[in-house]
Image (cartoon, one colour):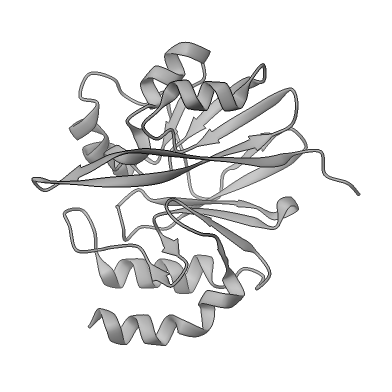
Length: 211
């Protein structure tokens, strides 16, 4: 059966700030939907660019893989422009409040929840480690996992800053991510895509490297 939904991708640029440091970053913004409606995964840096990519489609929700500022800084402006709710796992509220102390998310993402858009569903997988409320979004019908900063091409997301923990991210990868079909495309928060099959054999190396 042909799936109507598609994945659109844009890259936005800005800064990541945490623990007193600031870094220039390029972020992947993912749009999942069809010609009528869509969701945005990680509204990073540039609401106007995201609106342009959406075109005339109805934005149903803004999904946050986690609440580091570079993944959520444009979320309130995008929500205001479209009326779409911002959804975040509640464990990341302390991080969210560092960026948007006067604007809370509109709803929560819960582990195991399925979000429908067009003719596909996105399953929420709680994958803490990079951040307490980090989630991945699994679109089985599209053969795709949106990992935010939980998994990149070449290894797990960073765990050297506040609110992060290396053993936790390894557990998340081992139990929630690397058990998915090997052909699953991993679409990340920064940089190039990879696959579960390309990354899974390296779990032991990551554990040794992390210690």
